[in-house]
Length: 303
Image 1 (cartoon, rainbow, N blue to C red):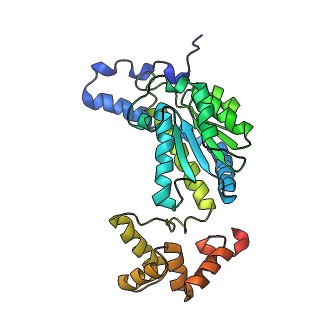
Image 2: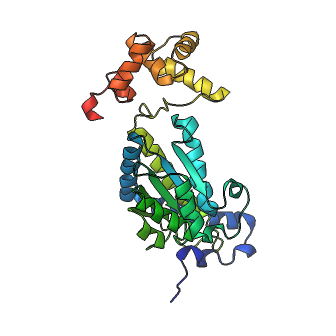
Image 3: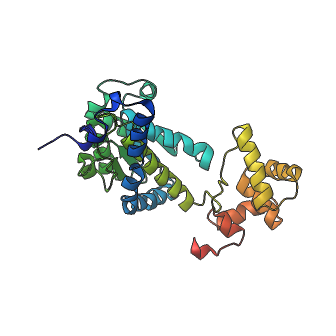
């Protein structure tokens, strides 16, 4: 009986990979990648529970913290970094922790994932409390750093979520909400930056995006809490104000944004409701931050 985790077992469908023509070897990789979305689909009920739990923590002014080692750690840090410009949350509200520290983002730190004490220390240093949600990522589910960190977060009262890519992952027993996207043996044996990494990124995408939608960070499928930190995002902000705010010119949209302190949401409320900044702020506050409610599209009870 093979006792290796699925992510460490050889894949019979790619055993002759080095002897294939380039196009055929790419086809094999593509065929394996195509199985990932199904592995994630199976986990949707658990992911939904995680989304609601994370959004509840953030609504209480808690934080979303990813923690992992190696590829898994980098994926968590990447998802966290993307939340600032996309949803306008601070880097103190959503952030990632990786075994070996920030230098491990660019270069492997050997042995970091095996240090359970460092995982505990990282959670303690982050001052985790019962208002926080901590998501631990480990493809095989066995990284001691991540397991110890997640257990410590649970002891401190945090909501704990695990994302692994094998069935009955050890990490699952350390979490309140266990997500197991079983991706099977990798194209390259043990290289979990491939299918397992893709699955983990998809799950992180769903959790962070779903939680932010539940918090009113979007209007339909528009990112109305976007932070205009570069030229592209500044143009997007103006376009949102013009389209949703029903403003007839770019010049007027720019003026509304300036009056609203570059807040797309406030600028839209000011334009659509015909009110000043303070009134728009009060309307959004009463709408719990949901633009669809502030604009009268849906009653507050539906949110």
